[in-house]
Image (tube, rainbow, N blue to C red; front, top):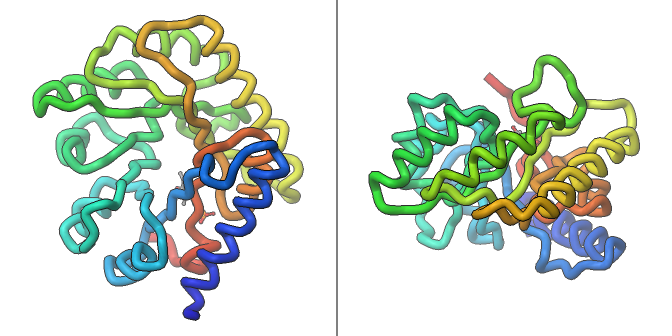
Length: 232
Ligand SMILES: *Cc1c(COP(=O)(O)O)cnc(C)c1O
């Protein structure tokens, strides 16, 4: 087994254990392998080892690698900040956009999706920790944004996403995951048209098991799969 295969195997097992601890089935949890700075060869190897969902945080990286991935069944997730003027480049490529945090961005996605006759699945990114440097809408404004999004017929809001703050101990982030889950429950209760809180995208290399215990069903993992990388 290669290191890559071993890593994927270990993570799959950890995900499975955490799912069971939280009363769910392993197959209820989607593993998004985060491939920023990873080249297409390595991504192809990861897909050959069972990865089906891949996540990129930059539009340019998706464009660079898209045609080099040999597998039709791969689903691309845009997980990083998305500029309105770049939506057009990825609208026909990605399966889901995790980082919608403004009506302006959502309207552009809606418009571009309509133009090519598709509906785009999106998640609303929430800044649950209230840290200033983060993207994401704050908890208090989230309901209002979602109400507005429910009017856009070519996007479908599928849930919420958050990036937990970096902390000394992973246990400290539990409270933020809990907050996101509670928010999704509150929003579901409002029964907005078009809105179904099916997914909670939370948890990365350092905290994905805790995130799953707190209700995550999409985890975004890079370092634990591909090792440490240099970020430009
Ligand atoms: C890089 C990144 C991840 C993965 O982080 P790791 O700690 O390497 O697992 C997850 N989500 C987002 C939005 C990222 O940018």
